[in-house]
Image (cartoon, rainbow, N blue to C red; front, side):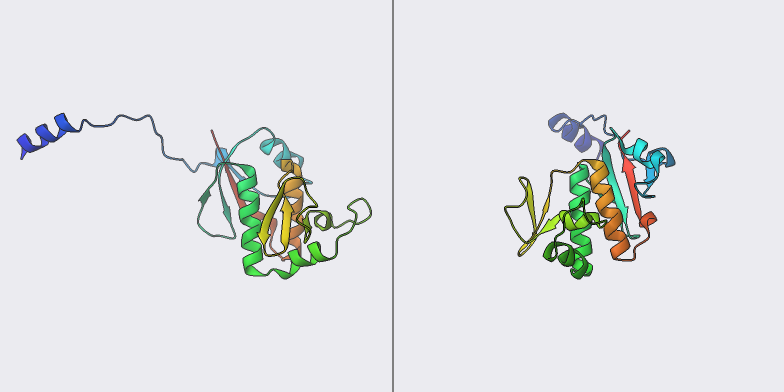
Length: 157
């Protein structure tokens, strides 16, 4: 049996890697507390996301903040499309209306220079900075009666 192992290792040498599995530590875990929390905003500024966990579901690995944002919006749409469709179907100027999301969703595919199709006849913009993404999520969570702390973010080291 050892001879077979020796032959196999000569034919297929063991691969060496510096891969380190993601460590879920408190140092790289953030709980969403809202955009009024200056400390939360400082922590995400300039940081890169590794994964997130939403509504007690399993942790989901992502490469970018926009990936997380769009996946959460899709999750909300799957649960109940009505609140997001309401924002899209009754748009208002964000300067004149306190509901921030009225300007981020639309039924017009040409409204945004960086549109993302969420579903048939429903679009959002990808051209948002992180504060705007989180402000949008904050308003959406409130619309869905989801506590903000149901979103956990795991940052890259």
